[in-house]
Image (cartoon, rainbow, N blue to C red; front, side):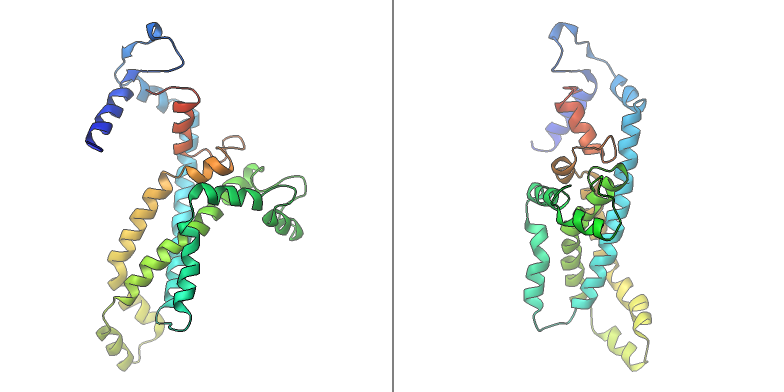
Length: 243
């Protein structure tokens, strides 16, 4: 009911000329694959696809290495670990739209803290701001996503690390294997199923990112942050091209 029916209904709409901005007598009804042909000819679609691909690759790679590194640091710690884990989880439990609005103020041109720091470090001119510059808008969004979702990878990878069997590590300690060799030959292979799960989940989320883009830039400036979800939203609810 909640999966199959909406999927079939959406596919039926995609094969129809269905636009809420036009009168019913101007609609053609069933048009086959015309919608798909038109979208493949649309430069904005290919631009949003490239932006989404770039965003996904960068944030997932950075979040994975950050998450794995911090999880390795926290592994086995006792003193203060519960407090640290609680603080690590805070960004993840915030509503994405709240995260977006918060970072909007941090990136604000006149009094934003991040903008102030970038200007003091001479990484950005006083004539612009992170979200107003075509070159910096997408990296600024990536920073927000990395800040919010790295905790997810930390906690899942940390749980995976703490569930690993101890026997291989004891054998490696007896053989006086180096820490890097232990990590490469024991930890990574044993952790592979967990790594696969978190990567698949994060790739799925990154591909369909919408909330922080809508809250921070709405796809701008220009098409710099126009990801696929924003492209779909604009066509459906700005142009009313439901089909």
